[in-house]
Every structure is written in C-alpha cells, then in structure tokens.
Image (cartoon, rainbow, N blue to C red; front, side, top):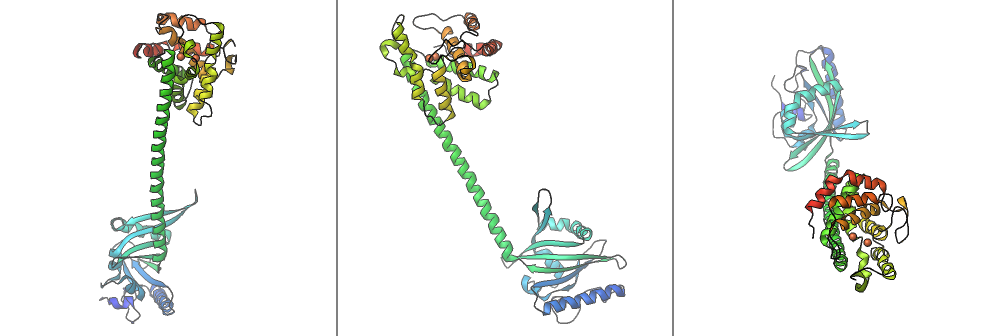
Length: 405
Ligand SMILES: [Fe+2]
Ligand SMILES: [Fe+2]
C-alpha cells in the first residue's frame, strides 16, 4: 500500500492508514472509521486539541498512524513524509507525571531522546498495561521549544492482533515554559541560599576566631601579671578536656570548656601588683583582696552573648568554691558548684602542684595525684576525683607532652 502523507495531516480526503484497506475484521474497521469521523468533526469545530489514532502490533515493530490532525503538521513544521518517524525523531524529552500517595506528591519522570529510543518498546508495553498514556513531549521547532501534552486511551484488539491508541495532543508550551522558569528560579534561589549560608559560616568562623584571639590575649595579660605561664593554661585546658569527656560532656561542650578554662583567673587583672606579686605570705586583708579576683573576673566576662563567654564567666566566679562549702566567694557546696568549675578546680590545683614557681619546687606527679585524692570530698567532687584517677594514663600524657615552662 502506498501511503499518502498529506491525507494523514489534513482533511483532504484520502485515507493513508493500513487497517481500513487491510485484512482486518469489520468490527475493527467500523470502529476505526467512526472514530476518524468523530475526530474530523472535532477538528472541524476548531477544538484546541490535535486528535490522532496510532497503531502498532502487539509483538512490536514500528508504530504507524491511522489518523493525525492537520494542526500537527502546522505546529511541528515537519518537512517529512512520515508522521510517526518525524514525531519520534523530533522529541527531545518526555515527561510523565505520576501522583504518589505516600507522601502525597507529584512525581515527574523525565526521559531524554536517547532513553526514549532505548525504552520505546517498554513504554508501549506500559501503555498497554495501563490502558493509556498521559505524557508531555518537548520538541525543538526551528530553535524554539514546543511542548505537547498527550492524553491517549489504548485498546488492544486481540482478534486482529493490533493495538490502537486514541489520543489528543494539546499545546502546553506556555504552561511548561512557566514551569521551567519556576524551576530555574528555584535553582537560582537555592544556589543563592547556599552561597549565603557559606558566607555566614565563613564570617561566623572569622568572628569566633577573632573573639578567641581577644580572649586569649586577655588571659595572657592576666597570667603574665600573676607570674603564671601560658604553659600552665595549655596544660590545664587539656587536663579539663580529659576529665570533661570522661564524665560524658559532648564534643562541642568539651571544646567550649577547653577555650573557657584559660579565663578562670582573668579577674587578677583587677588586683594591685603590690598584693599579686608580693613575695612571702599574705596578710588576712591581702588574701581578702585576692579573693575578689573571682567577682572581678565574672564582671569582666559578664553579659556575654556566646556560650563560651557565659561558661567562662561561670568558671571565673566559682573556680575557688569547694565541695565541702569552705571555698569562696559564695561558699557553695557540692553540686551547687557548676560542673565546669568543679572540673577546673581539680585541674588548676593539680597543675599548680606539678609546676615550679619562684616560691616552690614542682611536686612529683604521683605526690600531686595523692594530694588530689586526699582532697576528695573536701575541696573536690568525689566522682570527678575518681574519674581523674581512672584517667591517670591520659593525664600523664598531657603532663609529659605539654611544655613545662
Ligand atoms: Fe583563681
Ligand atoms: Fe590557675
């Protein structure tokens, strides 16, 4: 049979399909003829849809058209003699929208030209099983995009060994362009948001570093006046984190502790040199002045917005409190003393004992551990002392590795 493609596209009369002039049942021929008449009438009324009837064999092979609306040719601008081939070869993408029940959403499956070529048979089988097609095709027509929505109902005619697809195509270019614009805008927004997040993270990191720098200098200034060394502060922070992680502090809480502990004696900036650097023992009045370094330190670090400053303030105020209530400035007892300060108190005394000072020699490591143990329940939280002793290997590592200056 010679096909006359112009008739497939238009209403100029001549039929160019295979079924009406082939060896098929009268029932099928009748049904097809009435459908074609129906579609022609629909086109004649100027309906905004392009009807078509496609056919294929259940065993596979090329699709052919029994009928295709005239506007398909106009819209796609095909300069070819075969509708099916032209339609197939010009599709750029095929979108399938599926409603998902759990959770309710619309799933969009996009297949590109290469995938369509590979999956054509499978998609046709899926349409046969599902009884229809509901897809959107994208074409490139002279450099401009064209989208056609395809709604088709599939009928399998077992007796005639043919599958018919009654479909309508509708131009949805405007809607799809809007969707593409929205998706692009969403992508732009998303990348803009990601850039902003990175920028904020960078700035926050810089700010935290600057804040730590300032606090470190403040701490060094206080330590310098007191005759304490930077090495004492480094060792203390490390002892505290050994104890902190052993009593269950999270990694981030332990990091805060590590940076807050060095500021415990920052209040000594407010004590007169004549008392702070006095050689020999202090009078009771002078000791009372020394005791004020806790409140001074707390005032210096007050109103901090960051957790670091808030923890540092707590430690500055309460690191001389004692488990039995004999400490200062408030005489707090056992768990009234914040955990960070209970940890700091042990490590501060331990490092002071094991360090050399102008007025004393450094204690032996084991003697200092014994002293901490002796002060269990008197100065120090007994559970923390137990953990300190349990973690002697790590404590010793810090003791041996950190600079002793
Ligand atoms: Fe202190
Ligand atoms: Fe100290």
